Length: 258
Image 1 (cartoon, rainbow, N blue to C red):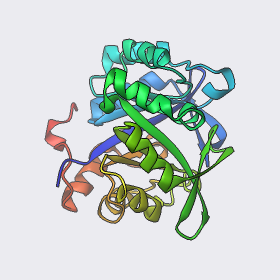
Image 2 (cartoon, rainbow, N blue to C red; image 1 turned 90 degrees about the vertical axis):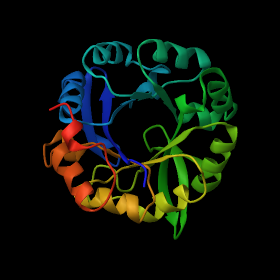
Image 3 (cartoon, rainbow, N blue to C red; image 1 turned 90 degrees about the horizontal axis):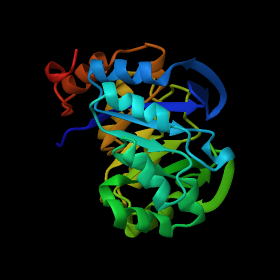
Image 4 (cartoon, rainbow, N blue to C red; image 1 turned 45 degrees about the vertical axis):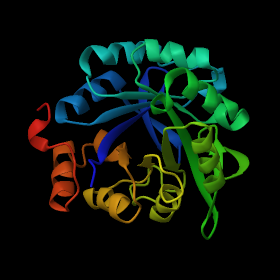
């Protein structure tokens, strides 16, 4: 088994790290850079920044946050929210991001996936998918922080995204997000089994065992966590050690920057 990445997800509104439930009812938590630096020092594998109000202003507002993070954080950084063109992507990458996550603009103009992949490589192009269950075994893709319907079937959309050049899928269950009740394993497995690119499971992690289920039952290649880390319910070391004990390959705790 390849190493399964553990990613800290930081949703940002303005200059604040925030957290909600089902992407709503946002609560301010603190300075995102402080949290990112702490997670890096604890041994996180990647940082994911999402500007959750970018669609309201038609631009990504994370430039300063990303620039500041690169001074103290030396793991890959993915940035999402408000990226609508190759030029937008180039700006974020020049600020220090390693990958770009795109949802709304890709739904409205799927060719953008191909354009970003052609300019910067598929490894930089992360297709962000916000999924809501509509019936047994079926999910619809949403955008605008899980508020707007697209009419797109999630499974068909991720297949199209892969064919256009996406190198990774960031898969967020809107139903489970923020509830800390566990991931939507059926959703993760359904997506992971139809595309040959890495799938990041996001939305619902509440305990270390959820990480294990996402990998073994959901076939996820990476796990993104927010509340469980932001509120200090478990440390990164505890989660990684639990994964190791369950037979999952993770970047060794002994190598972490602690």
